[in-house]
Image (cartoon, rainbow, N blue to C red; front, side):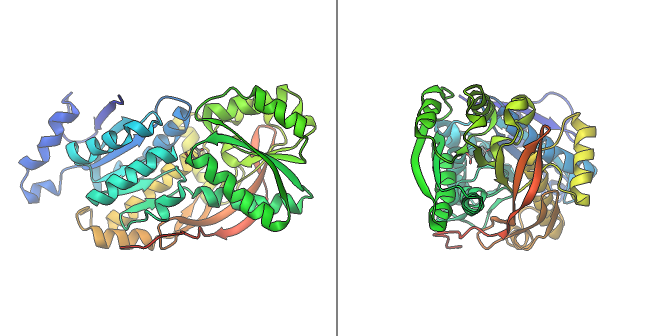
Length: 399
Ligand code: PHB
């Protein structure tokens, strides 16, 4: 059973009242006073498990933006309600219902895991709750299940890896073995890559998988050594990615079979991977050394706040706050004015640390996808793998 982590109220209601107490409080206000009540932001993220660090960085990125705005969003004070979703799809509907039904949040920001996110999207659609996805790439969230009140500040799984297919083929790679976890994000990231790689003329030799979030890679690494492809394409993230990259290097394969992947393989994980990550090439909508003023300012501010190096997860959290701030500002802080708020968010043009960020009709980012290489412990920019990539939003019919 997941738990509500903490309720922070930086403004109103100092003291230690629990979340349940607060849930009834807004009904006591008259409408005029309710305008002054804090905005309720539900953060539903993994704070434990293999994606724990990813969730924490999204949280830190969101908070950084809100601090830069003087502890306000759209001019409103903010109360955060945080839920640890543990990256467990089976608990996701209950967790989301608690934020929406009991806590009556104005917006939910979450999550990392595609399976959890799909359950959140369904509740958001049914209840018309604003949802901003700051990571999970499930294609359907801005595809077949797209909705006016659902936005994503991250990527679709297709979008993160499709450009890699052509980049790798153009680099002379003809045969690839893929490897990932057996769940939505793994399947969709491999499929995006494979679509473009085979269309370019490449061949997938074998698709290897293991259940999420297992990390017993040895048998699969032995299989790769036997198959001897020109390269490996992979999707792992968080703690699992750290272990996979280390195991791959420990087997000596990093010297003979180049390892590629979605950029999550080495983002947020690179420090823990150490030398084992050197030379890995990935595609992602971010690189550590993007030399634009927004990125330089972001990395400096993130370091000052946390003592840590920012990464894509922190950027996605930061941009989720920026997007909601734009929407709320357009309605003078009145989160109930949903249509107008959604219109402003859909039209937003954000000067993101990742580069220019805008949104397609399905509310998925249109953004550059970069080719990066790990050099000296950093995900360094090699080139733009594909500029202004727009997810096809297959099956999306906006209501
Ligand atoms: C996902 O499940 O959609 C997912 C998880 C971790 C990542 C990227 C995507 O780093």
